[in-house]
Structures are given as structure tokens and as C-alpha cells.
Length: 161
Length: 206
Image 1 (cartoon, rainbow over the protein chains, first blue to last red):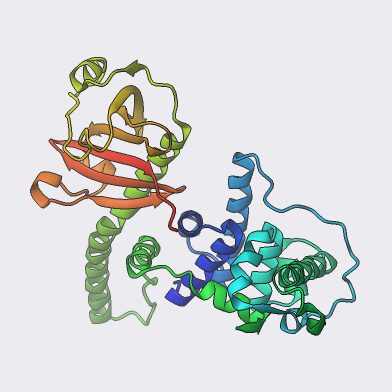
Image 2 (cartoon, rainbow over the protein chains, first blue to last red; image 1 turned 180 degrees about the vertical axis):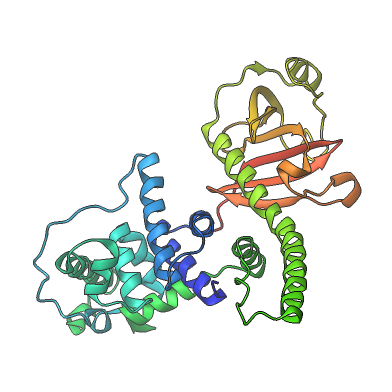
């Protein structure tokens, strides 16, 4: 059985991938239908359905001939502390702008870290990449957030460091 | 207000929420696959066996009744998936025209007559033409109204409750079902014995 708060969390995960409320609803509906058709497996249905959502999102992108998750090889953030999201500040009204600037993979990592509360290792296991890649994506999120703050408040950004 | 990125992200996603109707649809979808727990095995005893049999019979009756209800939603979703995909594909029309009588006359291979519907008045969209298609493997007609992003695709096929699920008759019940798939809004209703489904692109929220 899936509780309503689990459905809301899964819906928000779909929003993090699609950046569109209606597309997110469709994606979730397709994923839940597949989960039901498989017999509702998994002791942790939320994690299981997230995997279905991710695969479905990749399939949908492939059909539309776009790339779901851009690969990166930058491993320079390996020494990045995992609490970087708590140390980077942003004006709350600029969050939507940040989300528009992030790539799908960056938004996904940000969501899984900040909203679901997963560690970099857990995210790496879930999305099938290395911990280094996950940290690199978090680092890029941080840089983009800094970039937005610099664009809007250039005189303030010295105090952010 | 300045916040750390973790809190800002949490607050950002809080604004996205499924509404009550959407949650109810998901509950129905999930419950359509509920299975009863297997009967508990206990020491053989005639009255226990009789009681268990009665409970089992009652459970089967209840499940069949519940399944019939939940079966609807799965059937309806299958139709919605099919028509939304066809709407997006926008295959070429086989017959073009703006007069319903001349366009409907093209469909002589169907075993039913097309029916005009008041649900798509000419003030909403102008008929462009049609083509043959199928709905759940039954030969059907596809009529296209309007053009470009405002196009509406109307499908007509004889209504079969066993195949299509319980869908309201617009003339008797005055309502239709509305579902969404792939960014397409799909409306379903029965009119003059035909299942009608109308697909159009959902308008993005500001």
C-alpha cells in the first residue's frame, strides 16, 4: 500500500525530473500503474517506484530524442563536504530560477539529497553512478546557486563566502 | 528571505502537491490490485471449516464486486494512454473537409454510423477531417478539429462496457470522465451508444 505522503514525495521527485507539474503527474501515473501490474513488489515501495520513474523518464526522453541525464567525468569534488547544501545560501525567491538553470541530473541529486535526505553514497547506489559523480553534481548545483546570487546581488556575494 | 540551499529546496518542492481528486485516482489504481490474505490454516474442525468456507465465499463475492469497480479504472487508463499517444502522433488525415456529413460518409468500412456531438461546437473548433484508427483493437473513427496546438482529436467507437469500463452517458448523467496522460487532457463519455473520447493538449499553468 502507498500512503498519501509517499505519493506526494514521489510526485515531487517526478517534478524534479520533468520540471512540469502535468508531465510529472503523467510520469507518476505511468510508474504506479507499472508497479501495480508487477504485483506491488518491494518492502520499500517508495524506493522501488522511484527506480521505475527514473527508467520511465529515461525512456520518455529517448523517445523524444533528448538526453535524460548528461554524463560528467569531473571528479574534482571528491573532497567536497556532504553538508555543502546547508552552507550555501540563496534568496528563496531565486530557487525557481536555480531549478531552471540546473540540468536534470543536478536537480535529481539536489532533490534526493535535500528533500529525501539521502547521502551521496545512497544517491550513487540509487542512480547507478559513483559517489564522486554525485558529489560533482552537488558541487555544480552549489556553483550555479552562487552564480545566480552573484548575478542578482553582486555587491553581496563577497559576504557569502 | 535568505535560506540555506537545503531548506530552500525543501520549501520549493512543498508547493507541488497532488490534489484530493488526483490522490483518490491513485488510491483506486493501487487498490485495483489488492489481493486477499490466504486463508489461515488451523486444526481440522467441521465448524471451523464451515465458517472458513463461508468467509471465503463472502470474500470472493466482495472481491468480485470490488474488482469490477477497480477494473473500470484500469480499462479507462488503457484507453487514455492509447488516445493520448495517437493524438501526439497526429498521423495524416485520410479525408479532409469541414462538413460532418461529407467526412462521416468516408467511413463506410465501419459497422456503425458516426454521430455528431454537441461537446465540440463549431465555435470551439472547426472540423478538419478524419482517418480510420482503432480503440482497444476495435476499428474506430478519428476526427480532427482545429489545428496546431489547439487541435482536438475525437474518437468514436461502439461502446462496450466489458471492454471500456463504466463510462457515463452524457445524455442521461450529464457528465464525462476527465483524465490526463503525456500532457494531454482526455475526456471520455458515451453518446448515442458510442464511446467518444476527445484529446487535446493541456494548457500550461502560468
